[in-house]
Length: 300
Image 1 (cartoon, rainbow, N blue to C red):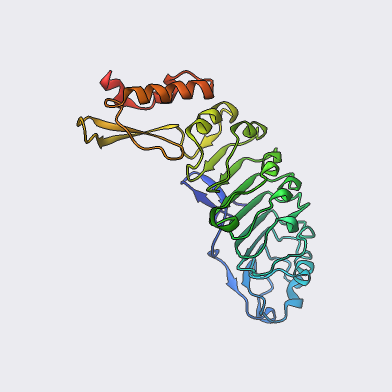
Image 2: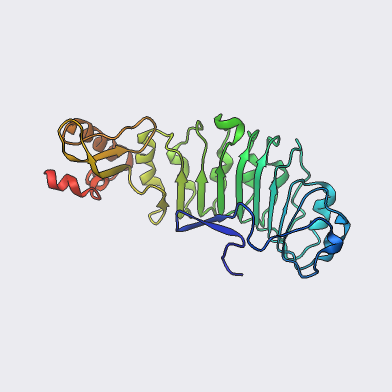
């Protein structure tokens, strides 16, 4: 099956994550009695007519809907080719188990206002990709530990009360097959050493930079060598920016919470301190943090 917009979307022009939005071939359904038998991509809401006919559409590969019910799960479970489902704007506090959807590989949950846990996903061992966005009340992600074959995970948008802390993220680091991870949680503090359990990780995006500089430095020693970070360096160079004090061209900004760009000519001690910190936490030589910054060589 081709890796096109069908199931994933490209992030940062390089990496793919589950697709969020209206699929280009999506057919809106108001009555299943009118739907062509060979339909593959559909969008319907809870008011669509003749939903009891849904199991007859064996070619369906993609379903987008706004409310999940036990009856709907039972019908969808009879579709052998269903690989992708997007649930958006569901307002229920509890969901039925989605485990019967044994062929489902990609799941997108968007704008779910009242769901507090991922318990309905528990045991979905066939699931490979999961995107969670705008889950406003989510506080419990422990069910992730049961998704043994998950390769892609994206937690983004206004999760768990618009920026509050996820109390327990241990389940995240039990995903031994995880290859792509996007984690957006403004106040949840991460432990760099936990990432050593994600030995197959190939792409990591932690955004925004709300961890301390030391975290990003320490992360260098725990990620697989071929893992691509959204920001590849702990020190970001701004080669075109001019220092307002000395006029030197080229500023540096450390990634991490409450970090500001500075001029290495005016603040050489700050640069030394950052490089010492980098060496201490990353286990790598100081030069590894600045080898990409060409204007530092010009000032030497």
